[in-house]
Length: 102
Ligand code: SF4
Ligand code: SF4
Image: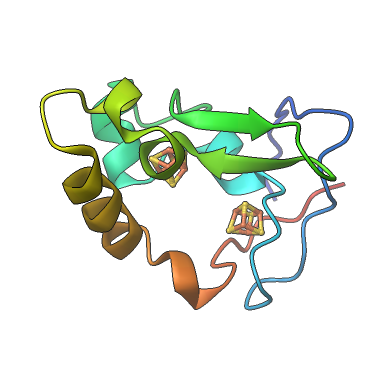
């Protein structure tokens, strides 16, 4: 199985199994951008440039297009961008990442 080194914050939560609720571990977006992230990052490999570390609370990664839409898509109203992003990335459907973090 191919291996990939990704860099994550030391306080990032461990990746849950696929299908579990997303805990913001960041593994998926640090490994490879989603279609929206690929558009914004202008690449299809490596970490998405819209991936943000949120230090408040216990610490977690968040999609910057949802958390800070104006920063990444300044030409659209923030509410539109956030709504589109939430739908596009299926944020409510749990972890869809089958990568195994070691
Ligand atoms: S979808 Fe999965 S891999 Fe991606 S941040 Fe959420 S829990 Fe982590
Ligand atoms: S969900 Fe957000 S942070 Fe993750 S790859 Fe897609 S655009 Fe980037």
